[in-house]
Image (cartoon, rainbow, N blue to C red; front, side, top):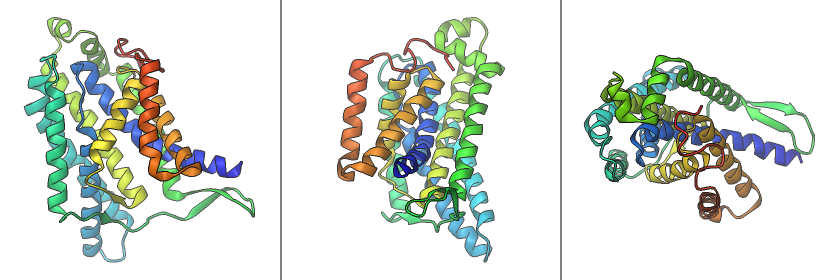
Length: 305
């Protein structure tokens, strides 16, 4: 039973990253009504920046670990936000009204370009960061199997919880959130009502990019590594999670991410790891067939939080 509880805590850690990516996807899809496969690659982009910059800053600041990592995270998020602004302005905004598969095709091309750039820039090597704040915090002392988390895991869980509350509150109460909900219901009507939809599309994509960059930064810090070829897989899982959760529901995206994270973790804990992704996609596909409008939210219910 303690092993099950430990794996449940581990599953929460995995779910955090999927939740950030799923919310990013939902924010953009609610307005454009088109699939977007670039967020996983943006996350890996930020993760590579975190690790590379952290290693460089550690050489420039001998004996220090936390400060170089914090500075690297800031650099990664800010630079990825700038990249997101360029993508939103040059690619997403012009294609937002097409009503076809244009954003899907464009985002797939962007994802491939970003992954190839990271691969070439790092000479086809994975980069690694030494463990930080990995002191175990025992939650339940048992001689046979102690239930524990590391300091870093506790900090990530706390940060993710606060970030989830902040994003939900921002969407629900801020004027941007009201404009976003209006555009999610009807983009053309929102523009007729005086909303600058061009600016809204770009701002939404920048916010979504920030969430994806945060996910990538947390992955790099938590696991000490990130792979350039994992971006598209994360994007596909994010797409499935968003559909299962309801394509316009932020809360549904988080619930779907929790379901995926727990499923992957429990499969890894009790079954053959090699078949995890295959079984995950099979389970998500089955859920999409059984619940085509989503389990936790309706795909047509734009603006739900």
